Amino acid sequence: MKTLLSILIIAFISFFQIQAQSQYETGMNKAFDLWSSGESQQAANLFERIASAEENNWLPFYYAAQIKIVESFDMEDVVLKEQQLEKAQELLDKSKANSQPENVENLVMQAMLYTAYITLDPSVYGMKLSGTVTSLYEKALKIAPENPRVVLSKAEWDMGAARFFGEDPGKYCPEVKRSLELFSKFKARSAFYPNWGEGRAKMILQNNCKN
Image (cartoon, rainbow, N blue to C red; front, side):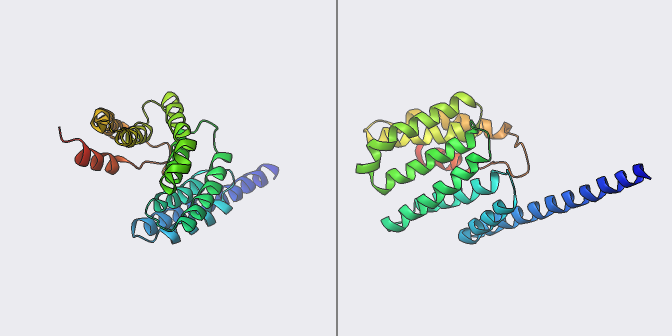
C-alpha cells in the first residue's frame, strides 16, 4: 500500500511539473512570437510575467532586458531612454542573480547596455564606461572564446571604437567572419538559450567588409 501511495505521489508531482513546464514553454514561445511580429513591448511584459512565475530561471529576465536595451538605441528622448535603460538594468540584475556569475550571455548584454548609455551621452558616459565595456568583452572572450555572440559583439564594439579614433574598422572583419563560422557550429544548451546574432553578423559583413 505504501509503495502504491509513493507511486501515486510521484506521478502526481510529475504531472504538475510537466504542466508547469508546458505553460513555461507556451509562454516563452508566445513572447518570441510577439517580439518577432514587432510587438516588443508586449513581448517584454510577457517575459517579465513569466519570470515572476519561474523561480531561479534567468532567461525570461534576460530577454526582457534585451528587448529594452535593443529598443533604446533608436530612442531620441533622453529622459525616456534613460528610464528604459534603468529598467533594463533592473531586469539584467535579476538575470544575473538567477544565473552563474560567469554567464557570458549576461556579460555581453551588460556590455550592450553600457554601450546604449554611451550613445545616450558620449561626452558623459564615453569616458566613464568605454573601458568597462572593453573589459566585459575581454572577460567574456576569456571565458568562452568559441561563443559566437561574444566574438561578434566584441568585434562590433572594436569597429565602433576604430571609427571613433579615425582608424580602419575593417581590420576587425576577420573576427566577424569567425563569428559566422562559430554560429554554424553553435548548439544552444536548451530550447530558449540565447541563439541570436547570426543575421547581425551577416549585415555587418555586408556593410563594412567588402573584401
